[in-house]
Length: 273
View 1: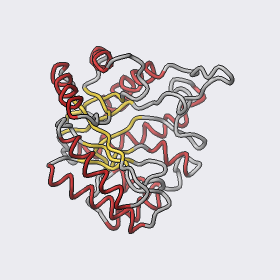
View 2: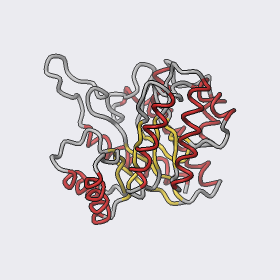
View 3: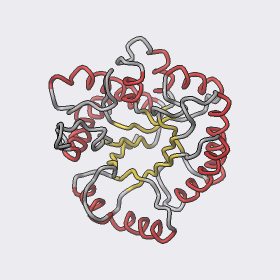
View 4: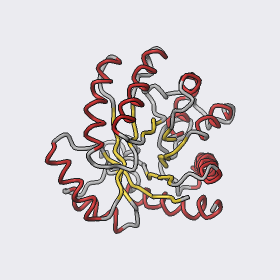
């Protein structure tokens, strides 16, 4: 099994996309996760830059709209745009936490059908405010669409369920068995992003996430999955805590995302492969 390490472009403060991609490459990442630009010319330019730097890309698609029909229309456009970049896969946010199961399934099923027609690999991210916002809603989706594939970001569930999910292993296991992409951010019972994964006071939350990530790697290795991408996805303010009055972030987002990549290699992948 091949593992590719990607970095989110979210929060990077370099003034140009060229500089962002160059820094990601120099830091030893294999690729980048980002949204596809809306303009055709911008997408062509980005694809050329990706090819030039030798990076891979995973595109993030966020379904927009207040109704399932509006979100499906949004997905039609966004997935077409994503396909032009020839991504490793497309990471999708869709549905709403306050919709019915039927409404959410309508959008998820549409995403499945559109991506199949475009020959795109897609995964659905575990994410607050979306169809997958909690364990029970996600389990109902799995029962209806057992073939669904996930981007595992358990930091969201820790926050939603006010725990490290110690009493919800049954549902976590069902997601792990269907995970083909990892968003490597660490959350706890209070927030979807801890202050700094290097801090000793965060060790309990970090250890819980490492356990989940290791099980995902092991499961995919046993299934003989060809490729498993991992994205360092610690975010900037307001995800990152800031100091009062100054709004200065309390840690360096870029440093943390590089640390997560190296930690993943040393503490997880090296012990499984």
